[in-house]
Image (tube, rainbow, N blue to C red; front, side, top):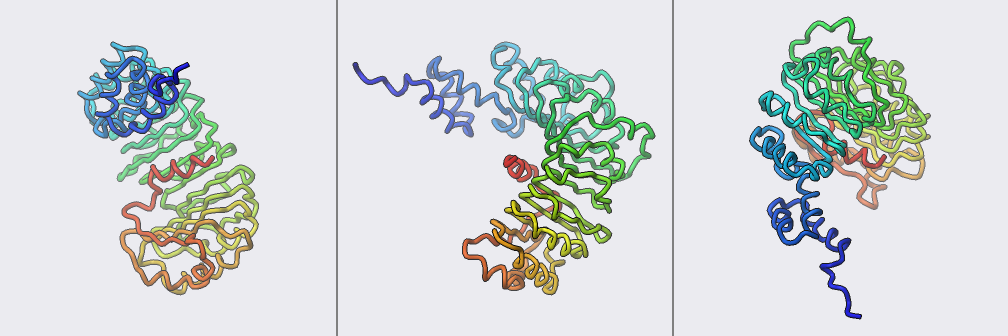
Length: 370
């Protein structure tokens, strides 16, 4: 019996086409080669339109073309797993058109909303966020959180990963009924970046009891006891700390694997006792300290060095010192004990630009460990 042509083995063919997932032109060409090539090529093309074309979320013509393709070839609807829309850049007709598609396998949804005009009750967006297949919802808005209440009431109960950023330079009066409208999610991961809002009333909207990963950047004092983190479930913590922050006792966080503490001014007093409480976190593998490059002075670095180098075995797999908006190479000399113990290159000093908030791509990479 003659050996089978490798190009006739569908599993092998699908695997090979997968290596072209980042090339739109190559996938388009593959889709035209043969019927056996078409399904896998189209699957990669339609899986995440914004990955195929970064301009997709804000270009109405691209979105309408995508809409027409799905209406003409309805079998492609099931291939769409991720969708990103910059609603403020789109006309209401475009938003209504894309939201009218009956997505059957949409898992990740990202919305950017500079104004509340698309949040009116009965809007098309409410149908989109209510899809029973949704697992991750990312929402960025330049408006008061209270304006989003109609949208939250329609969110799918299947959402397990929530990321949102709210910017309101001129904080609006908080609506009295907001606290009575909690977010209807049992979340595995929650990432919050809030500017110009009341962080305490924001945090009251969430049930943290099921969360395994939490990222909080609100720029103000947070009483940890008001959050009620589940000590036996938390694996990932990314916290913005300020001068007034109380030390956080992490000794009971038995499953903690990743910890990141970031601050926007001098290192708050709570950092050292919090790090010292890591002695009983046997599963902790990665620690990140992040602050403006000019705030980590020699004395503080030596104190951090003493605490971290005294942690019991097994040692941390990775320690990162992030310096934002600049880099001071002399800082490396202020961690002598850690560096002397570092035989595998686990200590990393790096510089990052912009906000103290953990970048979305890195946050998703971190929580992919869950």
